Image 1: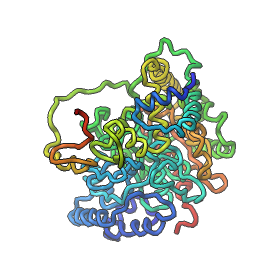
Image 2: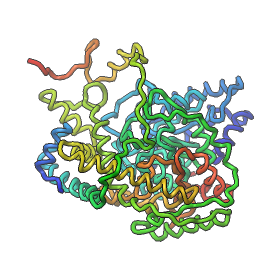
Image 3: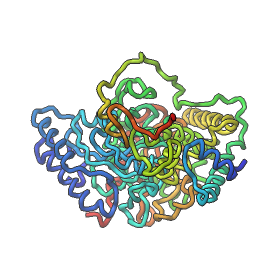
Image 4: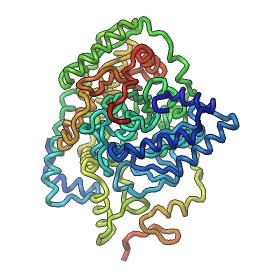
Length: 484
Length: 95
């Protein structure tokens, strides 16, 4: 069960080689064994998971089986799940039991997938190392002294250590792709609006997007088939025909034009990581692709614009945590105002407070044009850069992250250094483009991810390009040592 | 432009977050750094550029204002830190 792909697990369930209950118990046992060390899960509920597995077995028995029926999936603790504690990594929601299902959870429930548990994450998805979580940091299974990346760090550690066959994540500025790179597996951020944000706790609503985190591109395609679809409950959900993302996985990539932006290979990129990325690009040439030099001239403005737009939206979204209707309330206060102030002082961590303050500042009277409007204009320039680039190439490639996994604590006290982790991922969030990170090598035993960026709604294409690489190589099948 | 201590107190008030006297200097140091990063935006002239608020330039759809979730009062109230019958309880606001 340990190293089977989602397709193989599905076939084994169908052929009754094992039941969903047995499969779920197997992964629950792995979580029980390794979670004390990795801290990948915030909530595990054996009874709930096994009850779901039992129901799935009945579905399989009666022949009503979808591909992921009976397969346990780890869910990032940002997705509301009815009756499950949903914390978003924050003290503010430490005891919040969700009264409803997010659309993503509902879709997994509908096809009879099993919720294996809720994974650890940076508080309100604000972080790149999983060190801002109120529930403690997560360890990287490849080296326990290192961070797994963030904000979907718990899901990342769970997939890498094979505590779950696959997991969900969310990506506002790189939170799926950067941890996928640092933990050596495949992670996809879809086009903005492809997956419903309903019940996914909001951070920066114009950027937030859910996506799959799994071993391979094929597994991600199967996850995506479940997660996508128009939803009336999310006003930014795109109304378009549902695709089957496995259909074109094996399509030949002869003559594929790979755009390589010079801005992704300059200052800030670790030279050893650069070598691995260049090697992967050469391998694509061997597979029949052609490299085209392109430029994304405004990429250096992506981080500054993001740190206006994301905190601005966060300051608005997080105003709901007031200690009145749900969540944490300070124990002692003098009056209503004092209750708000103390609740938010005690309930939020330092990084969340910093971003709320920055967001409040850039939106405050007199500063709106200089910051928020300016950032939205730069967002347009960045988006235009991609539009121009796609006239010359079919896909854009570069590193997912500027470095391999770094040591815990190394960047914790320096927000600016931490923000640079997303230097190659943020521009695609601003432009709303789909992008996938796949493992393509290692440096000093730690994984390196290649990022493939597609044009809007080209998930099928980038999954195909990723899959062809994975059919010819085995980097995605490497497992960290010491997690038996 | 750089954030000063007085401004931090002002935005902390607007954001309803208590920042203690001891914390202000620490917060100031970090925010000044972040604002310097943000200031890089001013390097470029964006005068004739249309601002972009949605990644796909799609407008918000409208729908009828209808009740979609019914009978969730008890479930919702049960999540409140303090509630009584059908009410969320907060400190007295009106004398």
